[in-house]
Image (tube, rainbow, N blue to C red; front, side, top):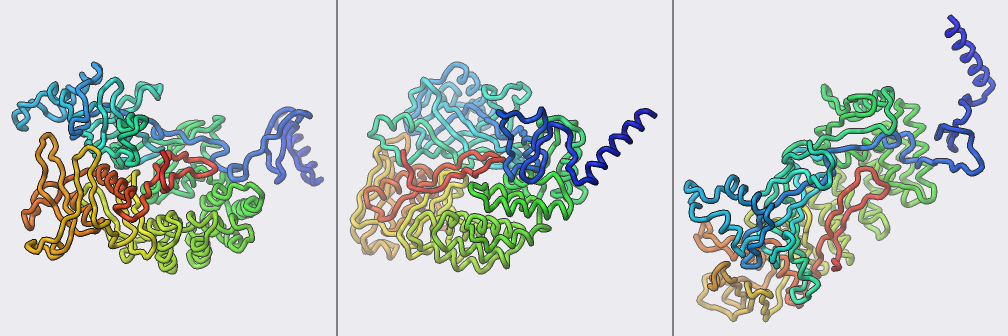
Length: 599
């Protein structure tokens, strides 16, 4: 009874403060400029520094929880690269040699008569200088679903005499958690497989001694496949059952599909998260929205939060990207507040508001604003062009994007090409698949000729200019004397009419022999040359003629680069910068962009 009387007295005291218009808060509680509680503790002393939570973080999931994942972690394996044409080595460290012998016997089936490999032993295979033992490393992003493709780094093992991995092919290699970089042994399980052609930086100079070690390193684009869904969870900084249940409710209200929960609170500090089906192809964006989701809900709370975000957008040094994500995480109900920011004189606020509105489905009002940023030079032009690639339903964006393919800035042209490709525009871009190994996109443009080479994700060469020419006369030979390209006089007896005029001849040295391949002849155009260089040395199903000399993507890129440097191809060569690993919660996105590379 005494307890209830005490509670009643406390309640009455609180009511007195409230009725008097005084904000009731226990001693030691501090508030920010909006009146929000920001810290507990002793009364602030003269030397005490107030903790200020950024407006894009305050009141969101990120303020009280961290994203913890079995992904965003290193995986590794030891594999074998073949096809190095005597640039490999027979040295293999003892520990790695035991593993590789077992792998060759059990996985590749060397020494088995049923596979016609009984004459090849694992020992002989490893001793061949056409092979090299390598370390294979990759990083699985947070929450990556099963089947996700990721890039792989490949490097020759230390204390081996391998000189170059260029042109080599990695045999299928099992990848597991890197035990040197994680602390729990329970993670020692297979999480992916890697294989494919090694890509080596084509700007390396074989005559430069300082570049020699870098020939021992390479990348396999999209070379690894994740074999299981990666677990992901939210972990509260301070365990609290009530907060856990509140976050679970909020996340499921915002993202769950009928009959499917996205968030499940496991205890007082952990919430298990599943990627919603609609976000599996863009799970990184989902995780950003998740971390920017406000912890309070309801029309009044959302409207008040949306207006606070709008005010924060106009402050100097504002994190516009993070603030816009708060709007996007709340959903369409706050769209009216976002729309009022489209016409802001603050250019950053205007752009990020329009981008948020477009993502919330406001294509009629937000679309023209984003287009206006895309067509004029400025700090938001590239972001605007990229955003239009995600919204094919903004039909009026197609014509401006096509016009940007002729821009003087090659980055603008590349972004416009990528946006049109994402929108499914098959008028401006023609695509060819070279034996399933890499793609060649030819872009219709009246601008300067550019060769744009992808080195992350899907291997691809982009030619800005449909009939990109090669100089006549031409003579080019690779540094290892393996491939020769030269001009020839007209051949009136040839079957192909284009060879009745002067043309280009191409041949290569056949690996493991001193013989040379047949001579292939094409016109003075870049795309036909790429087709011959990359097509496999096997008969065509239609004509039974050999199609090409079977070079790898890395080798072809290197040839195009060198020919461009020697002005044999009058085109600027642009190599995409590698994409940096993304952090799910960050103030400024860090994305590698294409540009002229530097060593």
